[in-house]
Amino acid sequence: MHDPDRIRAAFDDQCFACGRENHLGLGIDGFTVDGDRVTARFAPQPLHRGLQSRLHGGLSATALDEILVWAAILLEGVLCVTGTLD
Image 1 (spheres, rainbow, N blue to C red):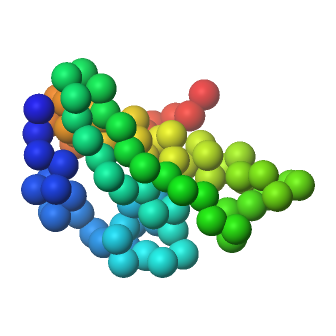
Image 2: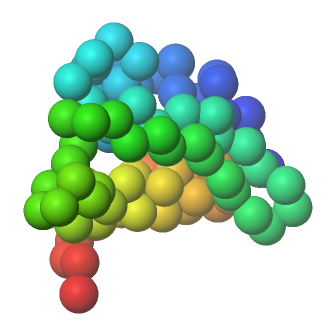
Image 3: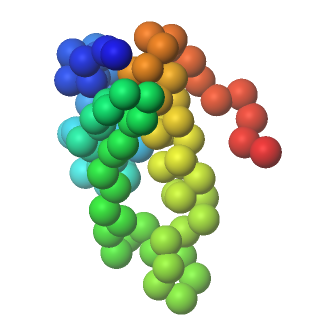
């Protein structure tokens, strides 16, 4: 297991998905590791709405992508990016 706060400190605070200084981004935060499980907090804001005031599908895909990449980083220590979303 790798320390989420120590690893996040090395990344850009302007990241759209998890950047602490990007106030228009998704604000994904609170990454925790418990055994082989990684969790995070995501509280969609009104500006994230799509059709009929529901979370925009592209943003839910972005959130899932971000959390899965962080799972690889935190559980395996592997820096990676998504090649495709199928």
